[in-house]
Image (cartoon, rainbow, N blue to C red; front, side, top):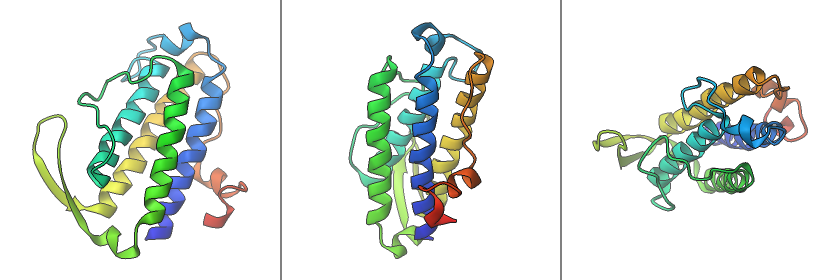
Length: 170
């Protein structure tokens, strides 16, 4: 199971780097344009992914900051958002690498953001949610790029596994 989540942590970092590279081609106006996505714009969507990752990592590790709103804008500009994203991706990879195999079957307890309930659950399903959530919203960002008439990057997991970064996981 550890290898499975190591792959998703590496894939997440790779996919985010590709997505941010594509987003860097957008103007400030395009980054902030409300295109009707759930978090309105590219900046809103990319911020949400970072917000959710920080919330989950705070739950998992007990460390770091955890925004109190899912639509918080932590970084209104792409360069500082990209820097924060790269740091969070490195944090996720390092944390997954640090876990012993038995940790994935363990439980953890946390407080929800939206309705302040205490939840206890196994780590592995929560990690699956973390990575699935990122993929879901990267898909929305991919659609935003397309809607703005830009080239969107290839983000498929199988494509990652065929790259130098992902061959170890194929």
